[in-house]
Image (tube, rainbow, N blue to C red; front, top):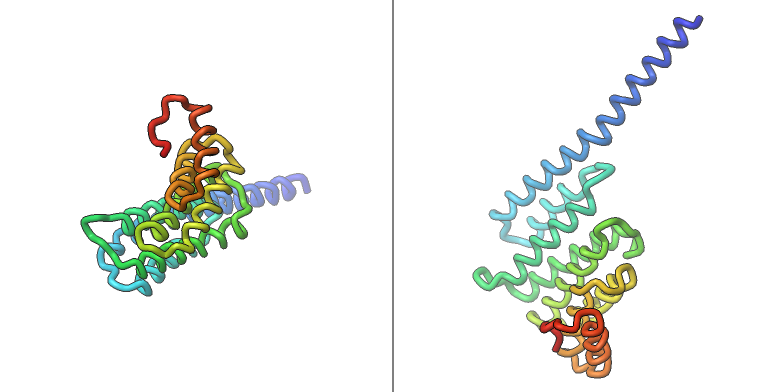
Length: 198
């Protein structure tokens, strides 16, 4: 009887170890591999549909970890695409790419409320993406979305310099003079030698 219990317990341990390896090692590895394949495929993308297809394949790969990191890496790739002076794209394409990413980010964070270790960096990048679509490509409604992301970033990390500076610049270019001045004073109260404020 005791031998049977030990054998059963040993079998359960083997199953648990294998399941742990599958969920904790194999799936994250395969997700990372899918993401690398996605980055390679970017070179050949010529349509928004192709872009969405290869991104979905990588982002939808099931894994208990890696989604936050992959969203951040993808955000940086899209930032490079929409702000690339050597290979300019149309405003319409920039808007579609950022809107697509925005939807994926909201889906992952459950409408922007899920917190994780690098969320402030992601909120800042999302703000930057919308800022570029608004300021560079003149989809002005994106400027208010950028503001929302910067404010969310500051809710999580009230003195994050990048978000404070970006929000202050946004207020400056949109002629919100009182808010821009208030933020300028706040930034200088933290960093008196800051030269980036307008």
